Image (cartoon, rainbow, N blue to C red):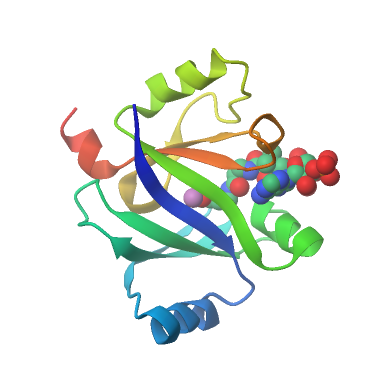
Length: 145
Ligand code: CMX
Ligand code: CO
């Protein structure tokens, strides 16, 4: 049900500078960039491995677009750094129900729109050993539903 690390979310103050750091240092390129108003972020997905068919792993660089967004709040408290870990699944609804059944609080009762047409749900970090955790069903996997 949980098949891979889909992405690591990294909070940054300046998205363009962060993109440049990862390009210069590791040679990672931007596969996709978008603004997600609901999540309050401007984001870039950098593909680290795999192909964009629902099996790839990414770094997700996140810059807040609103002062009251989760990433803005995180930056204020912790500064830049790792914000969340996202596991890929072929069925985000079933995956959410499965972890909820184990007593983990699912923050999104209904899966929400994520990067690149995916559907996502977050788990409370206090129920996951301090790790904000995201479940992701990629658009490619959705197409095969
Ligand atoms: N990782 C680990 N712990 C975190 C955390 C994070 N990213 N963000 C908050 N926490 C901890 C805080 O440190 C705090 O702990 P203490 O009580 O011990 O101090 C506790 O959680 C509550 O923190 P808070 O700042 O008061 O934050 P809120 O309760 O307002 O919100 C959370 C926390 C996780 C519910 C909220 O950030 C959320 O709903 N996140 C999901 C959405 C999101 O992060 N979107 C951006 C990414 C979008 C994407 O990936 O596409
Ligand atoms: Co994410």
